[in-house]
Length: 277
Image (cartoon, rainbow, N blue to C red):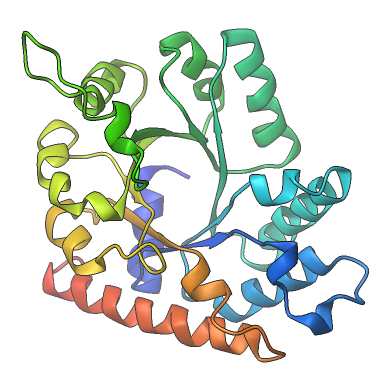
């Protein structure tokens, strides 16, 4: 899926919602405990009730890796189910990988050959050769960490070059421009740093941005759209806990849909205001 095709999905669904499948075994509704695979059972219901509202799903791999081999099985089943149920949906492996070239090549094989994800999040701080192996796959995407939503982002990402005044996250954006294109590379920019999106758009005006942090982390969808939207939308805004844990009862999937629908309606209004649909 290239950028134009992703934008078509946004227009068709009138949404740029990405739902994070941060599925925590300790937070699942009690009635799922007796199923053979509670993680997959939960994910399946969320997908069934929200796939017409979301253009992307983003499993956070930590929640699956924490369960060992069983977690990997649940993840594999989840990705295969999305492919079968809604093949037009963009699937992101929120893995935050990044290592020397031959190791990154193995990661790329795992996420693109075995699991058939559309994209993987990658930490860029080991440089170009740690990112390039992911870009050898046609129609797949690298999502580089640029400016993250957590408080610790201020520890390093805002460090300034004493001579130029350039911040580290700005250096990442500028340097990585030669590594990929607008059809295979996007950037993570936290929704809690929405005020920086205007500056970021000056550096990367045409790339898609994945903006986590709307919902439980307090990011503003309105602010993200105001400063981050471009003439092809250019945004995937992620919400995880606020949607998937809207209820811990047997109505959890219906409650998740209600929350997702509220976000989608707001997104539709923003797209209409911008005359993008």
